[in-house]
Length: 525
Image 1 (cartoon, helix red, strand yellow):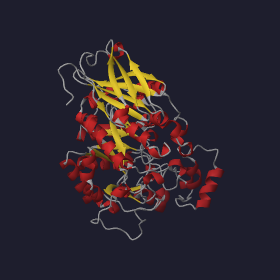
Image 2 (cartoon, one colour; image 1 turned 90 degrees about the vertical axis):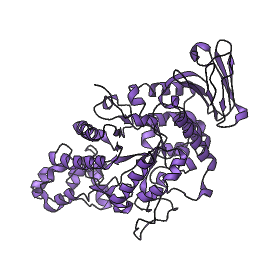
Image 3 (cartoon, one colour; image 1 turned 45 degrees about the horizontal axis):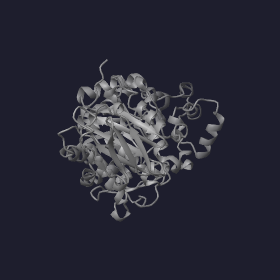
Image 4 (cartoon, one colour; image 1 turned 60 degrees about the vertical axis):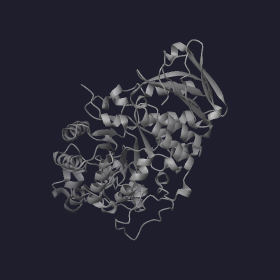
């Protein structure tokens, strides 16, 4: 089977937005019970961000170099994160409703920007109207097949118990601890709930009626103009659903991007009949282990169950091996559109995981912007927003510029500009050049251009020599063709040719060297 991934994603720089926390417009009416914008976020509180707020901040995002937005869920929901949808056919009125989404799509498309939205089709909120019908009608409801219910209890007339008290939830866990997670709720409440959370009834995507309902919504929003879907917990949904999903959305938009929230290496999802790409958490973990080093805050990592097992300190050779695996573990068409992220609404922020060390985030961004795949910035990282695990990683964006880390923003804007200015950094080949101690270097190259990236996350200056055969004839030793890009301290790093066509690098502590290698007759431009 051929693998067809959207061409535009290879050139995209994504920006992930949690809509309730990014920007608020006065044009969207607000309820009277909002948390103060700058107060620490809580699990259930709303701050009042909306889609028109995003529209008003598009100039800021364009100045940063962003070309695509990834929005966490926007459909009507009772939660601030909106992973509890109760209506798949409408945008939440607190975000401005369908009209505000129309305005956002139009404004983005006029600027050449794409918009990817979050699709949550494994579970809904318990306010989902077919689930309410089951609550009210029991066995007589025509929607009983849309969910995973305790059929025997339903036939016996036992009502579905969707609103247990906190004490009842605790006792549910204790009484059914021997039952697999996700099925305890069926025993205790009469229906399966995702992770046994009563607010999240699991959807039966094998049911024809449920499937038809979801697909009409998916097709509606694809026709409405969304450019892609990020799919939540897709491994917990029946596999055939995703085959049909791909067929339906691609029939409407052949360039629709389909990216899945799958945290581990799973090649069978990426063979051309399910997803285009995955969220590249293995890259995030490798960057944390290598660049965070002694700065890693294990008290934060220990609260991130996805990272506990996989984040380990790495030296240069270990990171080089990990990176080589990451850029070759899938077909090139897939690697080119993997969503390369440093953090998300599901993780503590990268800089916080690194103990507040800003150099770690700068170096990680430099790698992110010079690797194959589509880089994705989590809102606020570029101005130094910190945050531990949910809900702290979902703080409101600080729009007062005196609260920004201006140097971080300038650095990230520069790294984005570097990527966008040089096609080889988006489309070129990748080669590890060498690694020793805390240092490693790699090359992005094609027939007409080559860029070297060398990293030193160590606490001391370091050097690395690369022999001519490893360089593979990139550049000409008889011509001065190196330009040093000063990401840290221009005086602290250098690149020079050595006999045989090799290179000798001198790297600043906690810094990097980026060099363009040009053949005879070229200029640095």
